[in-house]
Amino acid sequence: MRPQAALLAKLSNDRLSHQDRLLIGQKLAEFGDTRPGVVVKHGLPDIAWVDIPEGQVKLEKIDHVFKVNPFRIAKYPVTNEQFEAFLKAEDGYRNKEWWKDIEQSHETLKPRW
Image 1 (cartoon, helix red, strand yellow):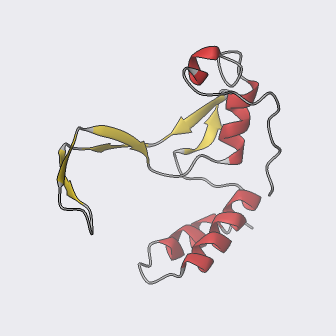
Image 2: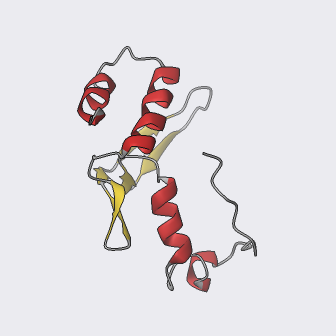
């Protein structure tokens, strides 16, 4: 049985509750999520990137318009499997370049689920 297609179809419902989305995400993690951008290929995270164009942002309760430069953001949150690949990679977690100007913890935490 491969329920991924049915679960992914449910995610297209804009009225789906956050709790139902969480449950579907947990089930996809359990069964194997088939979406590009959430897996590891050849030992590397396969991240699906979304290009965000430049523009302006007006925040509530702030009397200022901010200019936003173009950037890219992952389409999906990083999965435990993808983060584990980062932890294990020679140029990953232990690479000092990732920790420029911030403190690196010496121990990595295990995923909670």
